Image (tube, rainbow, N blue to C red):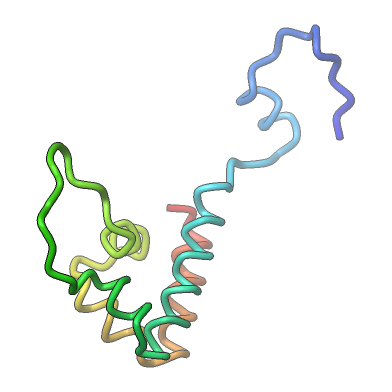
Amino acid sequence: MLRIPWIAKKTNERILNEANKRRSLVRTIRKRQATFLGHVMRRGKLEHLVTIGKFEEKRSRGRQREKIMDGLATWLGQGKVLDILAAVKDRDLWRDMIANAYKQGT
């Protein structure tokens, strides 16, 4: 690493620039979510229903939580969740979509 002392009053952004690195935690999480989604959707069991959210239940109060599918749709650049569900069936297309989204760093 850069061997920067802790008393050196430098911001995280400045240190990342000096090391020529980018923040990649969110990208890594989205990539892992997408690969897990592809795995679950091809199996088509109970996890498939839970991921899509087809269970009928009473909605909780307050702001609704962001669903995994909605987050992946924005990360992959797809407008609709149905487009993603169709793309998951074709493994090569799905891998290409994930690779392109990861390279773009969105």
